[in-house]
Length: 134
Image 1 (tube, rainbow, N blue to C red):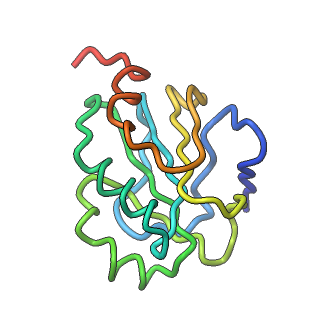
Image 2: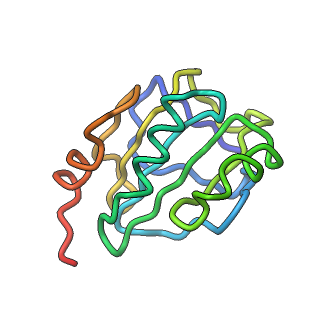
């Protein structure tokens, strides 16, 4: 089991091996955006929907961690499964402050940007942070 606290600066991407994966798989990518969200949070849902339109780099993975059961995530988030890998944090193995959404952008496993709260201009910020040669 690993512990991932949002109150500290996360210098490297967490190990997801002890989490319940809902769809897909984690793959090491040049850029990984981890979003901590909740199905019952309107801002989380707006963030996930907006991130579906982000094309980003070819070597990019979107990870969404939700404090909901695998069943609820399957029921409510299935339309997003093609662009994002979802994890269930129902058992609380990943420790976060309950503040949704939270964004953590990693390049080659190292944190380069983080933000608490909904980011309306997420696509613009991510494009600026991710210097892709696609």
